[in-house]
Structure formats: structure tokens, C-alpha cells
Amino acid sequence: SLPYYLTSKVESIIVVLPLYKGVKRNYFDKMKYEGEVKFAMSWRNQTAKIYSLTHNKVDYYFVENDQYFDLENGEIYQGYDQIERFAFFNIASLELLKLIKYQPNVIHANDWQTSMTLALYKEIYKNKKGYKNIKTLLTIHNPAFQGMCDKEALGDLFNLPDSLYDQGIAKFKGRVSTLKTGIMYADFINTVSPNNAREILEGFYSYDLEQVLKYRKDDFFGVLNGIDYNVYSPEEDELIYERFNFETIEKKKENKKAIQEMFNIEVNPNKILCGVVSRLTYQKGIVLILESIPWMVANNFQLIVLGGGEKGLEEGLQYYRDYYPDSIGIYTGYDDDLAHRVYSSLDLYLMPSLYEPCGLSQMVAQRYGSVPIVRLVGGLKDSVNPYNEYTKVGTGFGFNNFSSKELRDTLYYARDIYLNKKEDFKNIIRQCMEQNNSWSKSANEYKELYERLLKEK
Image 1: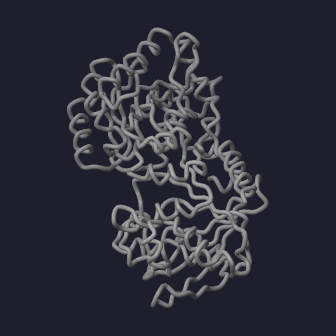
Image 2 (image 1 turned 90 degrees about the vertical axis):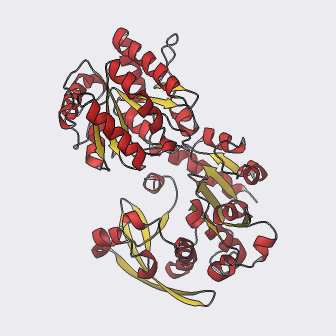
Image 3 (image 1 turned 60 degrees about the vertical axis):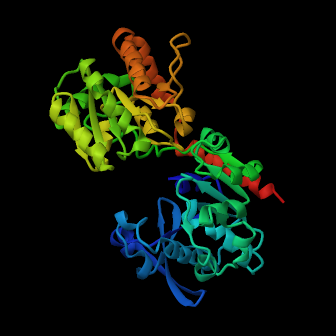
């Protein structure tokens, strides 16, 4: 969504993507063939066909090569050839600029998959006609994914000299990290929330990259991601049972009743309905929820979970579904339409993550007036202001330690507000729904970052 919201804030923008099966299946008949680019990857003579499509005011360019990109969604980040696949994409992305005669002011790369574009630009392209004076930005969504490969990949795949490894620019833990290399070459680097940037520099959830980023700390920023308010709008969402806004919040009770029926749990407006829409992983704090379920059921809570992931967590949730069928509802897998219905139905949304660079689910929950309970890490701390009963200010509830006891204590506190201070709880809902988590806000911050970048010598 970021490119769409940037279209009204910058002179022009293009997005370059691999042409995967899903995109080809849904959009290929609307695409325009632009031509092909030929280039070498060491001893390989490569060809990429380039297609274009304007969608929602954004100009997209797609790189086609079935050897690398004939993949379904679930296969995109799998396979032994990931480094080679994205090396091809990185070089093709730079070559296509010449084909379409487009010279950007800024190249904005994302994560390890495209971070080597920045090294290639500085080492090979920056003095070529049509490529001069381009600034570069690297956004890191999760530093745990580092694009690790052997030293030989520099020359064999990226056409880059071994000296980048020998000098320490690309070297990381005795191998090459494409993410670390991108960090070293980018003019600016950002992560997806200000608090996450601070955490990484302090060594929390940095996956050993803190020293590299401390070296670049003057060029390292945090920009909080947003959500698309055109997609997530309780007033206009055709996927939910009953549309509403804060003034008509009573209508939300119909959504709660409908989702209780759908998940085959007790239909009871007096139950406190909690929900999770998430990958089921340890990082997402699902284990804290599992440890808390018996207490939750005993204290008038219900829980519905939409997601899939680690087998042990799926099995644990299914065990409690079987043991507490009136209180626990499970949908294993993901369904976007159902996710909208879940978000629009809850009293409380649970997100007790071990770490969370940004997180979007808490923002979606707030948009639909489902009050989040979060562990105050990463972007969760930036987007959820824990409720203060004295000032009456807050957009959710929060706790600090990765502890099921602290989660239960916070649930107990939220329960007290929900049951005994109904106007205060309604005020929290109002603040959640009024909070600006839109991509438009984030796009303004990225525009400011681009402008600052262009002023750098």
C-alpha cells in the first residue's frame, strides 16, 4: 500500500517485482510487454522479459524468468536457489531502468532479497549514463532474515569482487550476508518502527547486527508502518456482517454474535470475546496464550484463533478447543474474508509477541474498535498507548515481560474495566478508532526521509 499513498506525494514512482505465478494468473492479460534485458551473472548469460501494469495509480514493472519465478505464493521464500533467484532479480531491476529510460532520485530496497541492489549500484552502475546521482534507502522489516551465503556467491552470482568479503563489508559470521552488505552500502537505512530501531541498536532482537547498525547509527531511522484505510474500514467493509462506526458501535454486537455462531462457541453477549489473527509461532507469543487458556475460560473469556504455523501450537490450541468447546474456536489456516469478520467482532485482540518489528494486526484491531492487549515491544509500543485509568488516555493495554502471568494480569485489568467501568472502556474504543494508523501518515514520513536523503552530499 505504501507506493499508492506515495503517488500523491512524489513526482513519480515505479515498483519492480518478480512475475510470480499468482500475479501472472490474475493480471498477465492486462500487462504491456516492454522488452527484454540481457546480462551476465558470472558465466551465465541471462535474459529477463519486462512487463508493465498501472494499478491503483502505481506503475509496476515485472521481471519474468520462469526458471526463477515460476512459483506459487507458498514457494516464494523457499528453495535452495533463493540467493541466485534474487541475485538475478537485483541485476534485472537495475538493467530495466535503462530499458524503460527511467532514472530515479532514490532506489528504495527492502530486506535481504533486494539489499544487494544497493551494492551493485555503488560498485557497478553509479557512473554509467542514466544512473548517476541516485540515493539509496534500505528498509529492514525483520533482521532475523539475513540472506546468508558463501563467499563465492559474490563473484558467481552478483558479479562483485571477493574483496568485499576480505575487507569485511559483506562478511558476517564467516559467510556473506546480503542484508549486512546492503546496510553497509545504503545511504540511509530504516526499520519499521522507531522503538524497533532503538531496540536493535541496544542489541535486542538485532540478531547480531547491532554493531553494524551502530556503525551506521547516524543514517538509521525508524518509520512506523501503517494499514490501508481503504481496505480496513468498519463503515464500508462489505466483508463484515454489520458495518459501523463509533457513533453506531452498538451494531458491533451483531458481529460478535455472528462470529460466535460461526466458530460454534457459546452465543453470549456477556462473554468477553478475545481473538488472534496470526501466524502460530513462538515469536507471536502464542505459547503465553496457551498457558492462559484455562484461566481465561474460568474468568468469563472466550477465544477465537485464525491462523496456522508450528505444529505443536496448532495441536495445543486444538486440544483446548476439544476441552472447552463453548469457549474456544479455531480456524487453522488463513482466510482474508474471515479475518475481517474476526477483527470486527472482538472485545479484545491479543498480541503478546516476543518481538515485533512493527506489527499490523494491532492497528487493524484498533480500526475496528477491538481493543488490543500487547507486549510492549517494537512497533507494538509505538502503536498501542497503554490505558491510564487516571488520565483516561489509552489505545489498548500493555505489559512488559514475556510472561503468561503478566498477560493474565493484564487480561484481568482489562476485564475489570470492561465489566465495571463501561464508559471508560467505551472511551478506549473511541481512542482506538480515532487513532491514525493509515499508510497516508507513514507515506508522509517516508517522503520526509527521501527529501532528507536527497539533501545529503
